[in-house]
Image 1 (cartoon, rainbow, N blue to C red):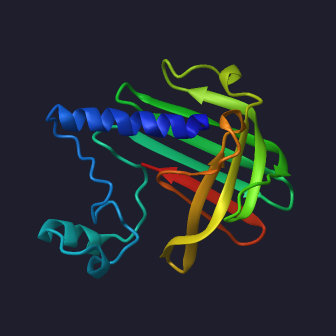
Image 2 (tube, rainbow, N blue to C red; image 1 turned 90 degrees about the vertical axis):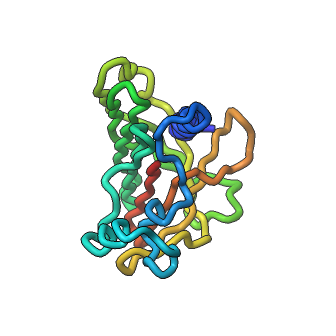
Length: 196
């Protein structure tokens, strides 16, 4: 798996440990509150306070939140130019780390049968912000491979979002669906995110 996904799994693992220890961390990824793209009717019955909150704002959340653990990954690719940008933020409970930069050398990737778009891309001009978050050299030149699936995950304000896949060639040829991932394109711009 890629390092983005590895960090997500680390967050999920930390959260499950919190649950088993009886902490107050909120980890129900299947709750109506987490499925912000669904209407109140689709999401099921919520508490009155949750319904009032949904009525006040239909905006997407700024960050994921798992009991203080956060993952927020956004990539924008210009398909015509073959370049893009990425911004990855995570907090494992010890402070926010941010890794951002450019994407270069985009090439078509093979093997994702469900994908309508699949590209390998190289991280470039990487900046790392935060204490104990590593250095840019840890990420510079790393190749990541993602694809947009054909299965619609949800629709938000008229835009359809689809499953997001990732391939880690070091672990084999199997594409894996990204937990908390979603993807959309208008034909020239491809945007994909991961939020937990």
